[in-house]
Length: 116
Length: 108
Image (cartoon, rainbow over all chains, first blue to last red; front, top):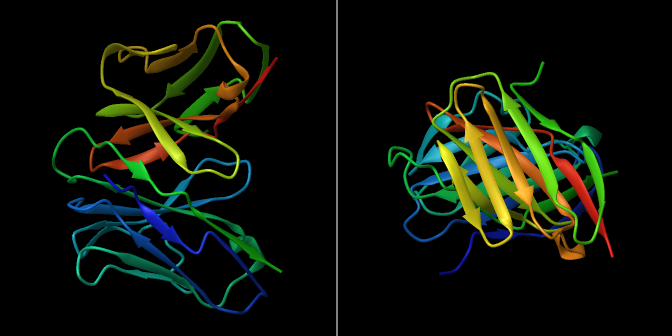
């Protein structure tokens, strides 16, 4: 089966600019996650969707970050305006269903953002 | 204190050595994941376990729920095993909490 697709793989922008990342999860996966991974650290959950609804966005900096999953399939994560500390890899992951018990995640390759 | 602690942070081994990476957690969990991340690459799920032990090839993962501790073992290590190994716990509500990762380097 096809994996989790993310684009772009790399993006370099200047601070205060905006950027958007796209994720297409595995077909049929109801749950989608966006993680931020700063160099040398473990991933940190930004937002979790179940279909097109938000389950957890408690760690999303809502003043500058937004995410949507309008049709319950692919998702976009936007940062506007970007700050230097947003430089990180943004990982998208999906799993079959939040309520299916065992929560096996499949990760995309990530989108590496550099803010200058 | 992080909810998930891994040790060691960095590990260098010679090819063929037996490797152990440890993970301790402080919260109630429904499952624990071991993940592998190669430089510049995405994250691959190695194991998901909620009790006992699982084995896949040269990799073995164990978990002790009472002690809130898990170990990942690599037998007959190889340079291609060089990667960051991440422990993540699945708390109720399906939020994953990640450890900081263990950077493993296996030298030929």
